[in-house]
Length: 567
Image 1 (cartoon, one colour):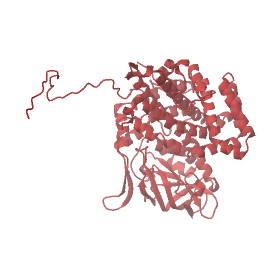
Image 2 (tube, helix red, strand yellow):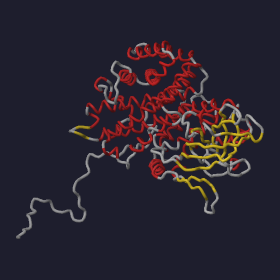
Image 3 (spheres, helix red, strand yellow):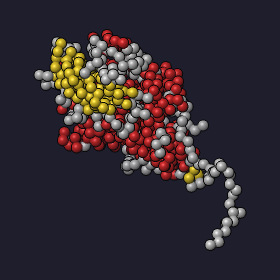
Image 4 (tube, one colour):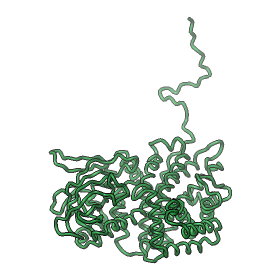
């Protein structure tokens, strides 16, 4: 067979060893803005409106520090190299150490040094809670796992302040701005971290089903020493210097709250055995463990019969952090989506200029600002005893946790779609944000638990509920869709019997959250933002998915520019 060499006149000459089949065009690098504070007009305005202008220089500095290439790299590495359990030392001693990537310690120390743990408790300066919330929100846009130990320690501070003996020992260490990662007795630490241990295998959110039991060994009642025997199925941040733990008190009906240190006061390791670390879908940088108490020492916190009330008080703070952490995820996903849409071209024009994409981006921007404003409002209520503020805090905190944390999952997935296949590749930030997004909807009580808590809050504080509805009615008097939604909600709450209300608990909670966001956007954001939000969430045909609203009827360009200024 005669095989001739084919002609190659029509083939471009070979480039030699450096083969190149194509040029990389129309690809958009991830947004990695150097200043998270400067890029967020809504956050800047909210901090100023809350009287926290004194905190702006520190927030500006943190917005730059947490956005550096090094901080972003630490966030990636801490999640790609999750903590490892090291149960024994080289000579067989049980140590139950957990080894973290160095980036974890750097990020955790950076957050603590800026006041991310003790900031609201260090003084009584007006606006302190908003300043802290803004810092927490900035940090959460880069790394979420480090927010967990900060959240629990922050929530433990007001509980421990009421225990004179423990506060005299730990007060300065809890308020300390340093991080002290050494595994050592409390008396040798500059700063301490506090975790929580409530969930057991058989009970989950039903703490009353706990079987872990505590027996008094030195005295009895508040401040006395007990021995704990049992387990915890989720033990958050297991290497914390101490945990606040729920346990049944032997011979009594109630659940107590106990201070269980990792090391006992005499310098010996407490009998808290770490069985393993959870292999979680997200929140990979943070350690969550399973433990058993082999007659571990613990000190009873508060009155014996008030253990659950103590845990609920802690939850009133940690749930706000869940809202803020979720809002930070939405914000981080939003800026990636807007950036990609501005620079990617499809079918002859920028992706952002495609009509259907404009609706999606507008909707995501509304969702992000509404989540931020609700989280900041709840934080702001923590520094006021005003009855209306307390109604916001008690009724809206579980409602916000239910709604914002759930919406975060959908919003993050929608933002990922904007990036297409590039958004789905794990080398980018979007998969980490999506894996992270469900945790706040589960932690500190899942959705149904939140809705039942909302109903309890409405029943226990009817005056506060009525004050909220009256205040909202005044604010929304010129917004027909919101006004009608508020009227329907008021009728439901007035006429519904307990069984009917439970069946409608999710609808009630959703409407409370949406109306609260509408009120906040109407009073704290530009008119265009509030108009678009109310029309799309409370109008006659609320969208069941992102992007259903018509971007032609709203100030889309202005809203997107507010969400992420274009240089």
